[in-house]
Image 1 (tube, rainbow, N blue to C red):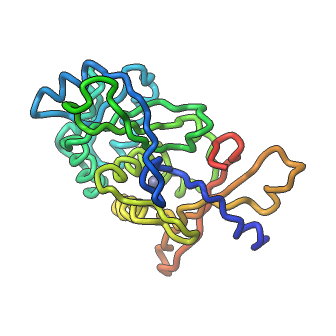
Image 2: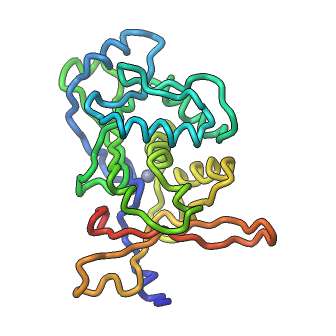
Image 3: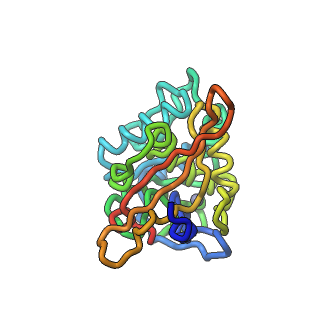
Length: 260
Ligand SMILES: [Zn+2]
């Protein structure tokens, strides 16, 4: 194991937020005002988590399936307008994830889920502030959750870590940034407030927890003769027999995923 390479930290995080991280200014994205959003916000019983109309059905399905697994809400679904509904009763899953998602759905801030597959500026997920192009003063604050579905298909590694790192966990991470105004860490070796909460949800689901927020380069991956740049991300899980933590890894080619 080459420790020099291991300490070569890439500062761009995964599940990235384009927000107040490290004092950065929120990125602004102009969003087209979707009629469904405007109408819904005329209704006091607003549902504040919606997907864009052009989000493909397969991606909606993936979001729904992953969020059902995490929350235990078996009837969670998008309605025909693209609004996300919990469906009510739950079986298993994470109570904290349900609490977060329920707060987002009933919250004042509009969260719009958008397909960002293949975008080089999105590594897995990020959230950016939206800006209404019309009647901004009368509209709720809007945030765009950008999801690069293709990135998640490029991840390999330990099965138990893969279960703790998918579209559902990415969406919840970004939603937590908005709902709790939580931050990602600035320094290697930390997970940050946002992932700390997400880890508690993983624990409720009996899944591995993320041990690091930042990924690190694979030993030798930065050598110039390679076109690929393999990176890895650490997870941890207690062994059932001894209680000691075992290390799990995910890896991907950062030239394909982004974040370099
Ligand atoms: Zn984040």
